[in-house]
Image 1 (cartoon, rainbow, N blue to C red):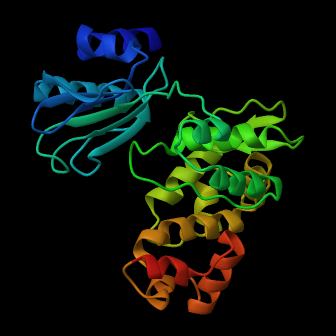
Image 2: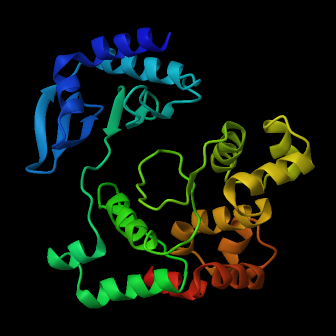
Length: 292
């Protein structure tokens, strides 16, 4: 079945896109809703590559949705998945989200930089690199934030390279397998039930998910869910909920008051939000508010 799906995808993509998929210089392939096709390369940046028919793009999205157990409909018009075979990140959308079918394929970065490489290539200063190294040594929280294609994954891999110098157990939680770690004590999180739980929470971020509800989603008892979540992620479910709500609140906080943000994301009050925020990130929400 998987082999048949791969064959269908290769036929739908066509020889041109399959060539881009195999080319290490190409890191991203985009079909916009106006039909234009672009690739992003390491050597030349963004390059226009012609056009793709809307029907062809739609067929690709339907195939990927089918493979990932999803259904592309008017109600569910955005499909996020990994491409079978390669594992590349795929994001597709159909009307009404976009005028016609559009998709984006993000390939794994072949760049493997260390923090010292960043300094050598004048991407960051030596002082900046030392600050990150010190934060790693002191086991501090590090938040890597940036727009699409800004190099977040490459920087995260550089930080992981620094972390691997220490004899510590590392657990990597990710919905797309992009991070690289050279340490021996590495554990990748792959339990499908807990993965489904995390995706469910992210999909319903506008409301608080009760323990009973999320356990039911995973077909587990509440006690078994709590045990399995801690076993697979290394953190308590309640702590993950708080962390997830804090991360989702950051863009909202830049344009709203701390009190409004606290209520919007389910915290008891602004004091509860501020206290949890500082415990997690090491600074207060005012820092983010001032950036707005």
